[in-house]
Amino acid sequence: MRDVAAHAGVALGTLYRHFSSKDELLVAALAQQISTLRYRVEQRSTAGDTPAERVADVLRRACRALERRPDLTAAMFTAMSSAGDMPVKLDVHDGFSAIIAGALDGQEVGDLDAIVGVLGHVWFAALMFRVGGMAPAGRMAEDLVRATQLLLR
Image (cartoon, rainbow, N blue to C red; front, side, top):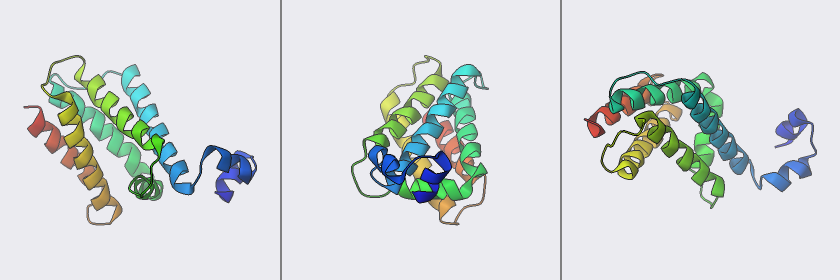
């Protein structure tokens, strides 16, 4: 927290007024990354003719962004999985849901909430394997693409 406050040029107390813990700060950083991805997806059309292809394209982009900074991703994942009620965790979920819904481009796919929920669980598990050193780079995207293809046939 001291390093972040120093880098931001604010007092440590100021940082703690906005974020009660390092975990909350890291989850907020994850929510911001998802928000940025959502903006980029809205600005640039997704590749693919089918809902599955478009969702897979978006998820590949999200995974590439996370894999560019593996140490930060590991810290954000650990914070996201920590105990504690952080309203910003809902921002992560809502952002993820909006990205998936946006990639569908209004096409009806059945139970969107269930699809987003399952993809979120696969994403979280794939992150756990990647962060834990049990999966190589690129595997997270492969798992999400496979799940997308199975859910959106």
